[in-house]
Length: 64
Image (cartoon, rainbow, N blue to C red):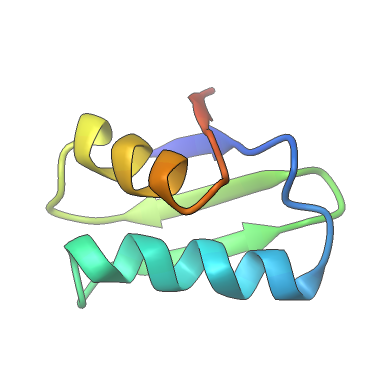
């Protein structure tokens, strides 16, 4: 899944996003790109679950 996270602006944000996603799926593959505020995720978790955990972490995400 591809997500846009408007307030992911740096490497620290990207690490927080990765950690949040991996809290719902420890085996998720997360590819962040803070420069364009985009993240690609390969996961068995649902889009809703990923969006919820990101929202809880302070990084609301919208699907691309």
